Image (cartoon, rainbow, N blue to C red):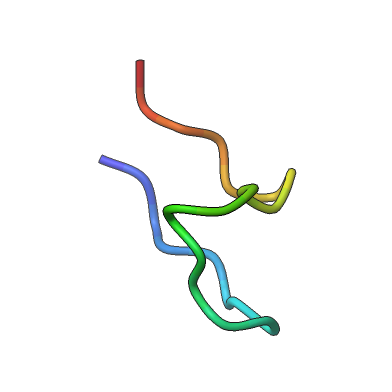
Length: 25
């Protein structure tokens, strides 16, 4: 379980994801 990083830009799951947010694979 990882702590959600503070997202400065709006969430765009459909579009490219910020590098800070690594997808849980």
